[in-house]
Structure formats: structure tokens, C-alpha cells
View 1: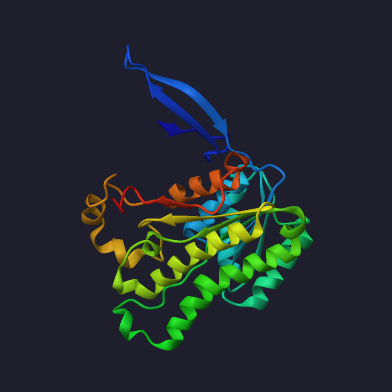
View 2: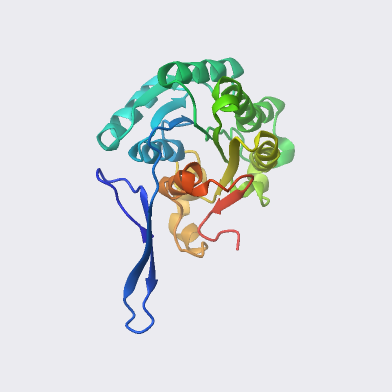
Length: 280
């Protein structure tokens, strides 16, 4: 069993239990608390879904967190919902993740507010087209590329120049199992996610040893962005998943907390699949 709950209601500890062979009882064999005290995190796409949950987990684990997304009002609402469980400071900066100037301004504001950036989570993504790959128009193809692939590189470059080159840090790129398989109705989205995995590996080698770079590949998670893929037939879709449920944002946030923490200090260049077994 894996679980644990911190004061305030958010999971920040990992408890591993094993079955006693003689009596069949669960016996705790190790407990590890994942903390980010004294760390500064910047999370893109943080007003809702996976990004908001990652910001919540990081803050509950003691990090100061800058939440960024396109809409100021949505960011402010997200922060208000996180304050009761926060153990670190929270701030917001509205920025389009695909706009290099906005990315630079957000990074600068984070360093001005908190002094540095220890963790960058590239979570923001877009998928403006659903249909056969061959029929996509160039404006939507370009938008998908600009937000999902060029965007993460720009944010990484800005964080490197502003803080991580001197102080080190951790970068987490939220990719997708779509980057590891084929689904032609969201084909260009998946192409950018596959490229993001390769970008992760390349930068993990390039920025070592001071900066660790890893990717997380979620399966189908119940978010607004993925609603068209699951809402109309959730039970049937979940039945095809080996663990018999769709993902929740918390499933991805738990993996992000581990990879951002010192518990993962010898992990870089990896792709962690969190999909309930969908790729099996």
C-alpha cells in the first residue's frame, strides 16, 4: 500500500507497507516524507487540472510556488482554493506559455519575488485540433508546436539563464503516453509530446550535473482539456484500463512531487509513465 496524509489534507508522505507472510497483516516497512521546504517552484498551466494539483502538492510540501497560466482571474481563484493547505508562499503571474516574451517576464517576476527558481514544471499544453492528422491547418499546427514544444524549451532556457545555471534545479516536463504510442485523432499533439520526451533526454545530459530533467507521461486523466476523450463514456473507457479507473490530477501530482524532491536526486533523463497500465 502507498499512502499518507499531511496536516491540512494533502499527501506529502510516502508509506510503503508489506504483507506479513505468517499472519497476513500489513506491516509498515518504511516511511518517507517528501518535502520541498525552502524550494521555489514555477508551474505553468497551473490554474486548473494537473498543473493546479502539482502546485497544491508542492505548496503543501513547503515550497514557495508561482502559478502561471493565461487568465489572471482563474489563477487567483486557484490560489484562493490552495491557501488553507499551503505551507509555502503562493503567487501568480498571467502568461501565455507559447509566448517567449511572456515566459521571460514570468521567470523574471518569480526571481524578483522569491530570489531564485529551484523547480520548473512545464505543464501548459494545447490541442486545438481533433481529427485526421493529414487535415490539420497550419495555424493550429503551429499553435500546437509553439505551446507544447517550443514553449517548454523557452521556459527552460529562461530559468537556466535567470537562476539554474548558478544554483542548479529540477525541471519536469509533462508529456503524455500519446508521445509513446499512436492515436491519429490527436496526432500532432502526440508528435509534440514525443518530441518533448526527446528534449527531456537531451537537456538532462546537457544541463547535468547541476540540473535534473525528467518527463512524466500521464495516461487519460479526468481534466477539462481531455474531457472530449472520456466524458461521454467514462465507465467503458475505464473498464479498458488495467487498474479500472481513469487518472486523477492527484495521480500525476504525486509523481511530480517525488521527482522534484531530494528522494529522486539520482534520477535524470527518465520518462515516468503514470497511466494505470494503459500502455500494457
